[in-house]
Length: 223
Image 1 (cartoon, one colour):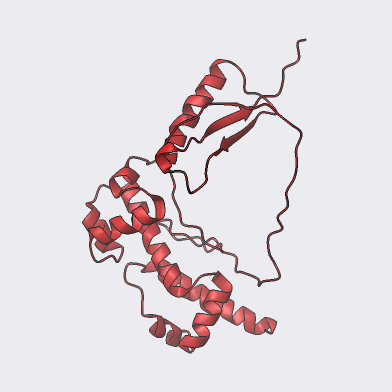
Image 2 (cartoon, rainbow, N blue to C red):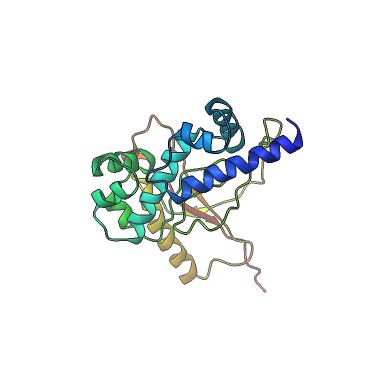
């Protein structure tokens, strides 16, 4: 694709994303949006997916869910009202979408106001409530892939605490662990923190798994 053509498609997809963010509860039909951007539905679908890394439909559903999550965490409206405000047919459909994505009910989401859930976006487009920052970066093609490698570090002894069951216990476990480390004056420069999942095999029932926070504390000098 020529550079000027790519820039033109960047502009079109940009306009489409801004439109979605501004009216995700009732977005224009895909074909209608394509015509408004002087494109055929086929070419618009192809370029939208190429530049954003997701289909138009997937993008709509993700942004709709993120708006619902925002309203659940920041407001006090009824679940049904929030569902309708985000384009869901009823509260049950919203509840199913939340449960499928995060494993929680809308009521449980409301109890975690310090948590900022989002569904991964290949280019970083998310619903924020303001939608005043257009800072996404388009997918550049298959040639630019993340390099992965396995690195072996020196052996270290970690100290930690474990929990059994729901991973959503981790935030509370981390708070208790930080408080303990601070009380014992263990944390300092060079401290390494990590969440350990020693039994994350999908075959192990969730209620029997034992994740937990852990830390490696740099030995303090005796002088």
